[in-house]
Image 1 (cartoon, rainbow, N blue to C red):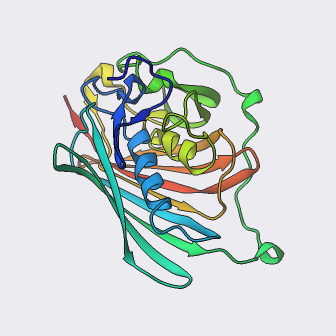
Image 2 (image 1 turned 45 degrees about the vertical axis):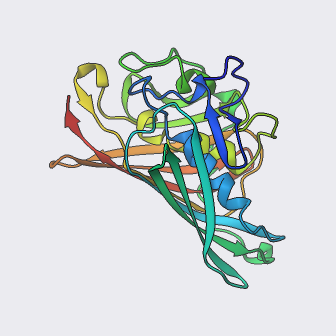
Length: 263
């Protein structure tokens, strides 16, 4: 890994990147947290055949396996071109093995300010939140420590729903601006951990195998707010959902499917 960790990734080629220690996930330091890789996939799709006024409005990432902290390749393509609606696809691979696949809808923007409405209530600002010690039972010296967390409701060690602001302390890619969709996606994959109903220290695993994000307004800024909730069913499956915010209010929703099992 690069010795100077001033970003989540350091470019090593046209579409290849070296992860830094900030990507190391809470389950194990041998695998990346999927927040930064999700943002890297979105970055690849946003740069694929770009068009003025186009915005990613829906993103789904399917996680095909653990992502080790080694060089990754993020490549995107247009799956279904269109004048107002396009479908994009992307793959994240290591050593020729695909570790994650993503699709995203890109819409051409139009002026609907006159009829905009229906969004949930905004969260209080990050200044109203508090910092809490990082949780027991997780590996905390990688990704979890790379984000500034501000809790409005809930706690790492308090099972149940949570309202939390997160701001990545580093840009996704070295030398690039940390703003908008990339910091939002870097934080969004944490919804299942922020609102966890189980404690890994007590012998439970609940990793997600996907993440879907719907965006109704392009996010701005470095802060991402999550009003998150997890539901666990009786047969080893859970669902984590969140209303997503920037400092101006709600921007969309996310959902994750969880595989729940004893260690």
